[in-house]
Image (cartoon, rainbow, N blue to C red; front, side, top):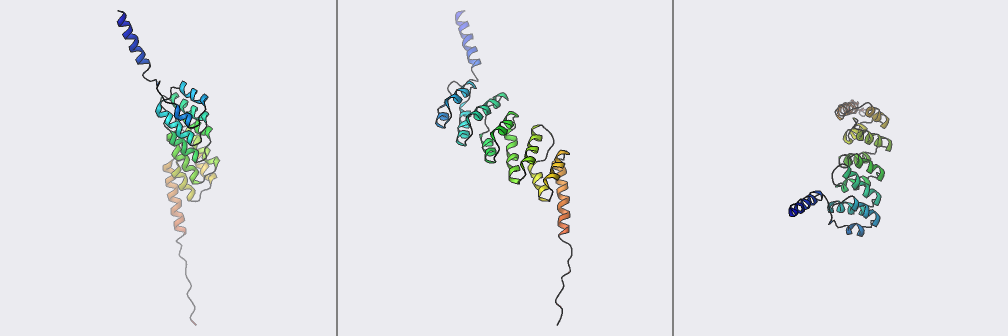
Length: 202
């Protein structure tokens, strides 16, 4: 009977500890310059070796300790490990501040939004337009993708006009149609017949 109880207790211990990472090596974080207090916080989050490797990449990219810990915490709150170091690095490279990157993470949108967010910077849109697009996306509201925004901008629309279309709920399909129409009108206006006067005979 006693052996049976011990067996059941051992089995329960294994079952409870199957998601634990007691042998995680935190030394790479210390070597990457993370403070011991932050490492202790990651230990309480039961960080895995894979996540440690992700954190090392972030530290090497200049991400603060607090943001590193918050990113792991946000991922765990969504029931998955943190694996988005590359997305964070891309956003940092495009001058997105850490608080906004955390906003993406807490919405579980880091990987989904990072590519378009970087493209919005490359298009040359103002901060106001960029923030409008990203906040609408985080709220689940219809908005335009970076490709559509770039094409509309290249047809000569001002940012004010683009924002009006965004607030009206324009879709990428509608943007494509308008862009084609504006391009056709522009191309037609550039092909007007101009009579070239020849030299007068002497």
